[in-house]
Length: 68
Image (spheres, helix red, strand yellow):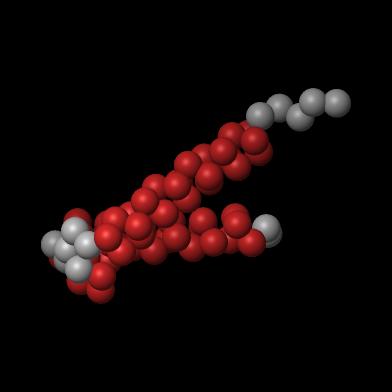
């Protein structure tokens, strides 16, 4: 697995766990660590969003029919 793919996958897992905490316990771990609305929190959220876009691109490449 390429390093960028692994990093984005890890960020998506962290983001998914954070959203699970928000949904089930009303607790935002990222905001608790970096501060609610802080620049660092926004950077983490942005990186998770970009990771999702990257994983979508990878998935679409894998699902597209092979060309010979």
